[in-house]
Amino acid sequence: MNWQERIKKIDKKRWLAGMAAVLIIAGALAVQLLGNERVAGERIQETRFFMDTVVSMQVLAEDPEAKAEQAFAAMKDLSDRADRFYSGSEIYRINEKAGQGPVEVDEDIFAIIQKGKEVGEKTGGLFTIAIAPLMDLWGFGKGMEPGKPAQEDIEEVLPLLDLEGITLYPDRNAVEIEEGMQLDLGGIAKGAVVDRGIEVLEELGVAAAFINAGGDIRVFGLKEDGTPWRIGVRDPRREDRGHLQDYVIEADTGSVVTSGDYERFFMEDGERFHHILDPRTGYPASGLRSVTVIGESCVEADILSTAAFMMGEEALDFLENYSDYEGLIINEDEEILTTSNFK
Amino acid sequence: MFRKLLEVWKKTRRGDRIIIGLALILGLAGILYPFLWDWLVGTPDNLQVIIHSLGAEKQIVPMGSVPPEGRELQVEGPIGDHLVQIEQEGVRVIAPEADPLKICEKTGWIRRPGATIVCVPNQLAVWLEGRDEHGLDGISE
Image 1 (spheres, rainbow over the protein chains, first blue to last red):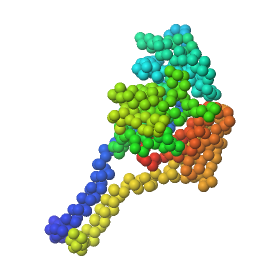
Image 2: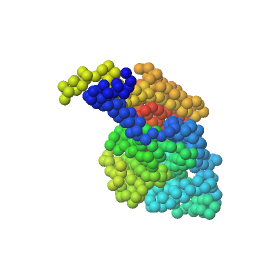
Image 3: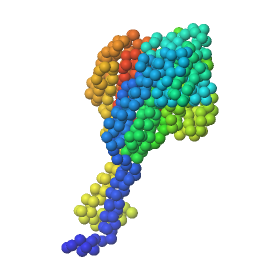
Image 4: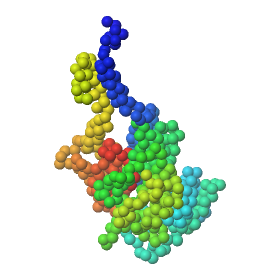
């Protein structure tokens, strides 16, 4: 009996049952294979330690290890050149020549300083890359002993934090700072370095990537199963360093940066002093536990989160002025507040 | 409805039943796939501790290999020795006396993938790698 004769012999009900079975199989396969857009290549995760933090990277690409390696190398190079404690860095050179005229630097370091000054000025000086003298006074510099400084010492350094004391010469990538001033790119370099890593990976034609430098995160592309990256926001109220369950960000592009009072601090006479210093008062900023900013550029999100941290609940109004950025704050009463389009 | 299905079932032959059985298994597997995946790779056994210290090879300790009483590792550094305490559900670091801020010790126990402990003066970093139970790729902090 050939196949045509066999088919004729199958009654209608059995035919329907067979068809239903085929449809179920096709449906199950479709859910797995077609439900999400698949991307060619392999996704790997690599982790390094530099910028005094753990930097992890996920890369989805053909030959992802080599591409991750190139991105790490570019990031490490930029972070070294932006490190004021490294005697071979360009920032070290600028600080060494304070009050002695302009210092020419590489284009990318100049761009970071320029960005820091420009956006810092927009924040009314709440974010300042000239924060180094105050950081050192509190002992938050690398290898220093932390402690509460005398009021007169604080008052003495406050004028040195003014961004007006930084002069830029864009025609020759030169930077001049006034005598006594010292630059510290700590509040901006991580974001800039993450942006650099993403830039390199995009140039290499990577399908998707995720970079996390100590909590400064930037992503692009979709994962191999077609889903976006999922980023949690640290809940400062949780001792287990867990995340806010109701605020998981799903993104195929952009950055998420958080500034919080829980990372670096010391206790003195029963009082807690954290490392995010307010250049207006010279003391650790108060009013908020954390500020999270989302937007495209990691370096700008980095600056905005630090500046917003100084502002207490006015931070939300401040962030609303930046149409490309959204924010989430947790205040000292442990309430969560967000800008209008935070999601 | 059930009677009709029973009638249809009675008329099926062995081949039909194999196809239907296969379809049910595959359909069920498709639905349960994400949960099975979590169950298979999302367990704490999948977690591993990575210890990175200046000038030394990275040490990798799978959490599954840690005995019930835990494990301690001494890690040398320029300003003194750290003690890395690994238990089945987490890791913490005890800082040397000479560490001024003792940030690493204040960090306390870390338990989720991606969580890190960093000691800047001693250039020590300890972190957990593995699949996050909430499906997160990272936490902004």
